[in-house]
Structures are given as structure tokens and as C-alpha cells.
Amino acid sequence: MGVVVAIDAGTTGVRAFAVDEAGQAVGWSYREFAQHFPQPGWVEHDPLEIWDAVETTLSELGENLDQPIAAIGITNQRETVVVWDKRTGEPLHRAIVWQDRRTADRCASLENAGHLPLVRRTTGLVLDPYFSASKLEWLLTDGGVEADENLAFGTVDSWVLWRLTGGAVHATDPSNASRTLLYDINTRAWSPELCDLFGVPPTCLPEVRPSSGRLGTTADGVPISGIAGDQQAALFGQACFEPGMTKNTYGTGSFVLMNVGDACPPPVDGLLTTMAWELANGDVAYALEGAIFVTGAAVQWLRDGLQIIDGADEIEALARSVPSTDGAYVVPAFAGLGSPWWDPYARGTIVGLSRGVGRAHLARAVLESIAFQTRDAIDAMGAAARREVTTLRADGGAAANNLLLQMQADQLQVPVARPKVAETTALGAVYLAGFAEGVWSSLDEVSAQWALDAEFTPAISAASADDRQRGWHRALERSRRWAQD
Image (tube, rainbow, N blue to C red; front, side, top):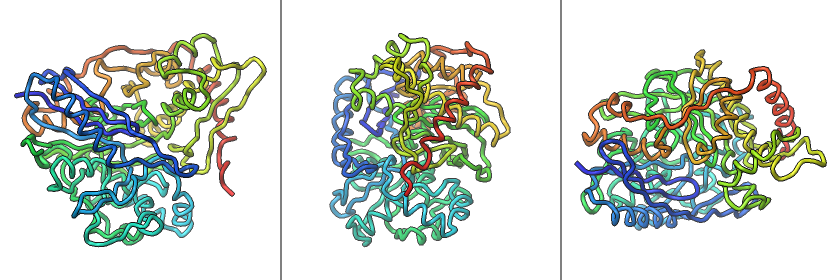
């Protein structure tokens, strides 16, 4: 049958990842691309650099495979806005990244004008610059992009799909569409009312197709049969197919998703409701999501900003060299705060410093901040869903850090399970594409391939965990609304 390949177009780079019929990784290739920061709080990517990374990684991967490619799946950084000319396929502006905060004031003005209830009941989201619509509106008003019949808008999956199919297919899937602030998750269609609110011409929007199902083919005839936003793909790759199953992906940011079944739940304060996926047979799943903007990026900040580590892999040993943070807390609100706070004006804070605090204590405080933020989101999620999270499935680059996962188990007071295949975002795209092409015949078959690598159980009391969390909340409160006039 051959292997299934995922194109994982993330926030800092692109990975091409091949999996065989047994669910085993058989090859991968990775390329970073540049991050552009034209102003404080602005983050951009060059869409052509993203596409170059896709081409390069696919080529390198293909050279080392000894089996044909049965299908390709795409997974991607969500909410990032790409606009291009349908005639030429050329980008009309740098991509505006999900982390970008340039439209914070616009989102605040829309909320003040009373539009939040419409947004909440239609999209399950909040009025925050994190999502795509206000970025697209900015491009059409301040970014010099003309809203004519040749304009194409898409999240990164649509851009990659367009390029892979030679411009034949302009499409996305519900998991990505549901992150734009333009998609009605109840009717599962683009919302005319929201398009009008943000001044978006519906003609520029991609067709919404199932997450698992043939979308098109490459020039070589390889079917492209799966698409999902990175966090929904990770939920699928973690085999969280039953309501209540929960995962957290520890990446540049961290994203906690709980499968809540096939009925769209009402909006929940502090959390997002999102489409998890839609299969070719029409089966759908919804998820509650806690979006945490900065987790792994805080480790990058220790490396690149403070230069107290040379590589991310050094942080665990450095943090283990001290038994505690000596009362120091780091709140990495570099791009505001996400779930459950939703404060775009929050900024990063270090509190509790004493003369004895050094680089090791700061490293440990950064790891603790990841565990604290995740607990905040999961506490809100469990209360909203009226379900206790009994196990958290962990993935993403930082899930390789044993100390972090132990801190997480301590804070949650439940086991944290890490699978043998850590690249679950790519794995989800693989399974969606392979499921569509008959490589795997059922979700039970996919679920049976999930295998445990390590499990971390609580090593401190609930009272101790709560005491640390209270200190975190005191520190967090000092970061709130910092950049607000």
C-alpha cells in the first residue's frame, strides 16, 4: 500500500513525516523558516519561505523512502492568515501569524460595540487578535490588499494545498475554518453576518471540505486526503476518539483539547469551542480548547533573549540543579494571555526575585509556568464539561522533558501519559489521510496503534500543588492589563 506522509507546517518550521501501515515512523525531514517582527507585538512569515520548506522537506524525505507514498495529509499552524493572487499564486503580503497582536484595539472596539455575543454563539471563539478575521480585515484596510475577484484567503493549510495541487484546489477543513471567526460551527458553513462584520468578501474564502477525504492530487498523482489544524490533528493522533479524552500539545504555545462528542456545546467562559474534525462519512467531533500562547516559546526566550542556555535540551538538567525556584515566578505573557484569561494586554513578568535567584531558578520557573498555565486551562475545562480529566495525554516537543511532565502531573494530581510516537500532530494528519485512502479501515484500528512511552504520576500532595498555584495566580495578576492605556 505504501507509506502515508504528513506535511506539518508549524509556526517555526515545516516537517515532512512518513508513517507505515503499522503506525511506525519511517522517515522525516525538517526545515526552519524565518520569523519577522516588524513592530513590537507583530509577527509575520514569508509564505514563499513556508512553501520552499515544504518542497525541500518532501524532496529530502522522498529520497530516503523505499516505499511509494499512498497519501499526503496536511497539518498546520492555525489562525495565521495568507493572502495571494489567484491568477499568479503569488502572496500579496507576508502571512500574519496567530501570535500577532496588531488588531487588539480593533477586537476591543468590536467587543465594546456589543458584537461578542454574536461571535460566541456563532463561532465558539472570542474577540481576540489571535484569530484570523481581524488580521484579514487589517490586510484589506491597512495592509494594502485589494478585495477583488482575484483575492484568495486561506490559513496555511489552504496555501500549501493550493501550491501542492498547482492552483487547482482552494479549500480548507472545518478544524481550520472554525478558527477564523468567520465560520458558523452550528451550521458548519461560512457566516454571511460575520463576513459582513469584518468586511471580508465571501468569494475569497476557501471551500470547506471534510478533514478526511480526497481533496486533490499532486503533479505526480499522489492523493492529498487529510487536513486538520495542528491541535485537532494532535487530538486525532493521540486517538482521543471518545468524549472526555484530553490531550495537551506542548509546542511554541500549548493547547489543551477535550473531545466533547458530536453535538456542538454552548459557549463556555474562558474556553473555546472548536470543530475537532469531520470525516468523509459526515461524522463530526467537537472539542473544548484551552489555548496557551507561550510555553515552548519561553524556553526559546531563555535561549535567544536571555542567553542563559545554548539549546532547549539543556533546560531540564539546569532546572533539576535546584530543588525549587526560591519563590520566583515567571509569567511568559509575551503575546498576552489566552485561556482562561483572554487578556491581550498582559505582558511578561518575573516576580519574587531575591539575591539568591540565578539562571537555574529562572529555568525551573519557566517550566513551572508551563505546568501552571496548563492547569488553569484544564481546571476551567473540567468545570465546563462537568467531567474530571482522569489522564492527560501529552505530546509536542517539550513533552520530551521528563521534569516538565512530572511538574504537570503534580499540578493536575492525575497521571500524564506520553506516547511512543511524540509527533502526534503529524501523526493525526497521517491517520486522517490514510483513513480516507483505506490504509486504516476504522478508528478502532487507529486507536490500537497508540502506545505508551512513559507515565508520570503525582509526587506531591494536592495541598502543596494548590499552594504553588496560589503563588502563580498572584504573579499572574501582576502581568494582567500591563500594556493597556
